[in-house]
Image 1 (cartoon, helix red, strand yellow):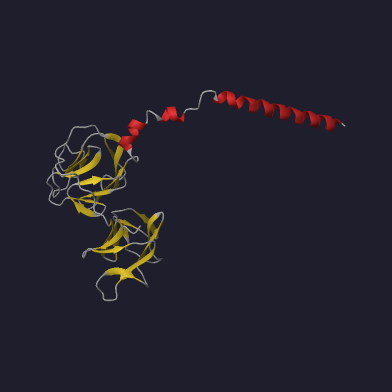
Image 2: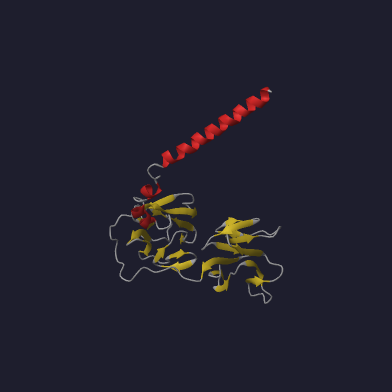
Length: 259
């Protein structure tokens, strides 16, 4: 968990998150939100399961990704927390990986239907888009993920599988996108990454671990998992022994019961 950071807006100050409880409130100098030792407005609790936001009883006005939180919320990388008029983002110490130089245009290779972009905020909350083919994000009528807002680019970005990686590629938008709370143009995405378009349209990338490698391995799994020849015959003597013992017990019960 030492790779996680709390980033306080608008100064973009980062504070590392170790395992434990981290209180956030107004600092003594009145400069805004920061880590405090007493009277926190909210707490960020870090354990082996992840990061939890807890809100003391009676505190109001706390939101995660635009949704109010009254008591507790589990956070994912890239979440935006709004506290007492200020914003905080949960980010990683390492920025998103960039595609290799010269990755160029689409290769036309087949994607993977198991790789899914799932909406977790905004207009597409609850909807999913599989990446068996490239997906266009923008205001254009032909966009797969269409965001019909005047300031949004007609062709904002494209998501696709390129050379085995899931790549987000900017198509010339004015503001770019966010991956795990970081402003990016292009990025290689990993399962669990959170992608944000136009500040509040949020998606999470979901995919099996090693999805592309597991397709090739799937052919050998049934043979490896299949029972060995003769396995059923090996179980038969044990069934016979159990039946003989049961019959003997019943005979003894009848013999001594009759006496």
